[in-house]
Image 1 (cartoon, rainbow, N blue to C red):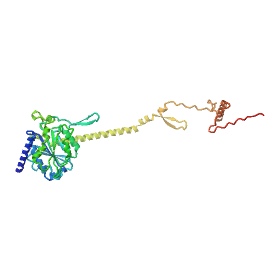
Image 2 (cartoon, rainbow, N blue to C red; image 1 turned 30 degrees about the vertical axis):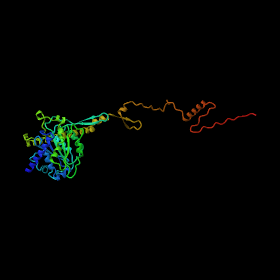
Image 3 (cartoon, rainbow, N blue to C red; image 1 turned 180 degrees about the vertical axis):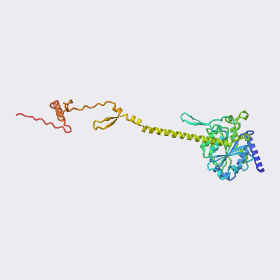
Image 4 (cartoon, helix red, strand yellow; image 1 turned 120 degrees about the horizontal axis):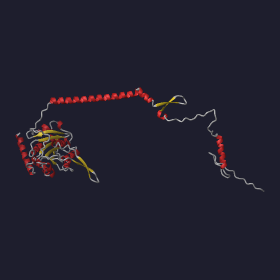
Length: 417
């Protein structure tokens, strides 16, 4: 334990020198530690490289942390809150809390879930606010997302140390989360820890360091390779954070506590906060009463629905079996006696209401009052006579219907000798 204390004191001294060289002496911030437990970090855990690195990060963070308590997270497929870290309980912390068994390793590497949880932890009233989407451009229209601003200035910025062994698999979601967090006073310092004997593939993290369409540049990347001493690590980690604090946009999001700046401790409960006692029996009785009331309401609604269905069925049955209704329906139909068969034929009353003109029956006793039409032969003879009277000599007779026109005989000339 004494050897660990001496080693930690040497690391703290190197960290103070690095902070003074960067102009961060006297600066306070809220520090959070994020550790990768995906399959890309398995060789580093097996080689016992994570615990020394996290010890050096702790020595650096305690130089400007506001209260000496550092929240820690582990991430992979999903994120897990590890609790708060202090110097007292940091010895053997990785084996005790981070990778307790092989089940703590996760298959995939996703950055977005832990980014959301950390921002929701420190900025619960700002992170879940909806974003606005507007169209920009004249010839080529495109959409631009405007994320919500900080609701109230904070007293201290948040410095998030993000230890990972490779690029993530949810790049689009991670970029969107980083853009949203650029509206908040939080800086993401990514630390790439490659597997022993290899050079890590951190292409996405290098692009994320220069991510566009952000309110401010709130990302930094540093690769902690083999053979790097503590001073070199501290200089690399504090390479971009001082420049971030000098931005006018960041200074506008910060305000001293004496001037109204809010202290962001997230969901952490302070020791002097009083926790109200809960009457378990009263809560149980209240929940049972609410469940009984919901059951009675459902039973009453079912009874009303059954009564309404029964009333509807009874009304439909009465409509088909009531004698008065049948009589009213029969009155709408009249029975007209047929003149041919003598049987009754139903006709609609609306159609039978109009007077029907009956055709007079001819009488066989007296002379007929109607003129008879000429027979077929007489009619044909009269038409032939009229046609012959209209024809003049020398004209052709019309061709017979359906046949060829007959030839006219040639005239004969008589010569007198």
